[in-house]
Image 1 (cartoon, rainbow, N blue to C red):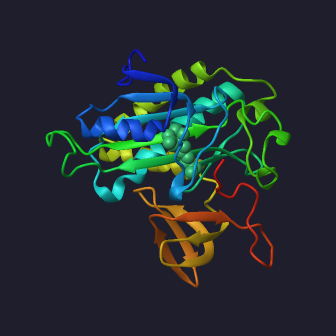
Image 2: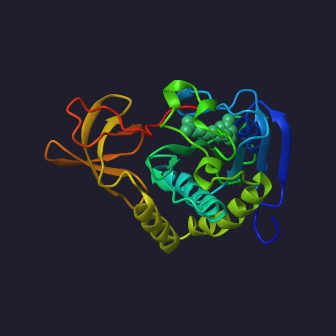
Image 3: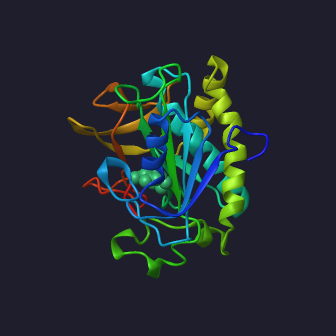
Length: 275
Ligand code: BTN
């Protein structure tokens, strides 16, 4: 994309996973800014070891290679930069209002999942490539652009929990146009990762778009599961949850928005699920 760091765009009709591809490129010393985009992935990766599926040519499946100067505890901001850029681009082209669901989803007005993000790295270590390069973070996003066209395309368990921009806009969208708008929007967000002020602005933008803040949530971490109310994001993009009278900062894990008033804590539509 001219005027951005994203000038090396590698396009695949089909690839196993754009994230896997860029992680391998990063290990061989590829610089920040390389982009991989696929019409189809044979082994698309979702979070928590899940698969990410989409029919050929229907959705935007793209990964970017970043080498931000971030401490390990700040890496979530790279995911945030991608989420904000994708949200802005998708809103602009579809006219739909989109929000962020912590940690890594874009959701529609009724909480349905429209996009998911998977960040992978740090690849420093044996065979990780030239040490003068900052550690790589590969951030991949799958945006439901033209699939599903309608709820009948979805497996029953995802009806009401996932949707596409096409459904929200009422018409199909152009994938190439969305990719261009995304990369243009991402450029200043990635610039922002490099300064204290930029990171503060990023965190503020994340707060203002985060539908999780204020929601009753169930946090599913590696070691425990607990319920509480999400009240804020930290300067590093981590979720602050009030639970049992104390504030807890959640750095990783799955978060389910609980349906207000549901006595059994059932998950709200839009709960993070693979497609
Ligand atoms: C999630 O589980 O919500 C994250 C899904 C991330 C999917 C994208 S599609 C492009 C990139 N390549 C992959 O293999 N995964 C990510």
